[in-house]
Image (cartoon, rainbow, N blue to C red; front, side, top):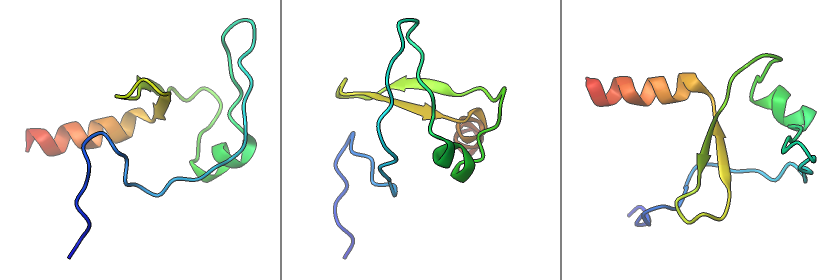
Length: 74
């Protein structure tokens, strides 16, 4: 029997890639190994979402959002 999912808890595979530092301009650099694994290229746009519990943010590729919106539409 699968474990019961809790609302607001991400159950997808996650990984720890290291730390980033926020610059005085509010910028962060995404580590190279993350960019390579997730195929994030120079100039790509990422959607910034606040976590439901306000403990952090998630960065999401627009095509992922489009895929989910298409599923909802269908």
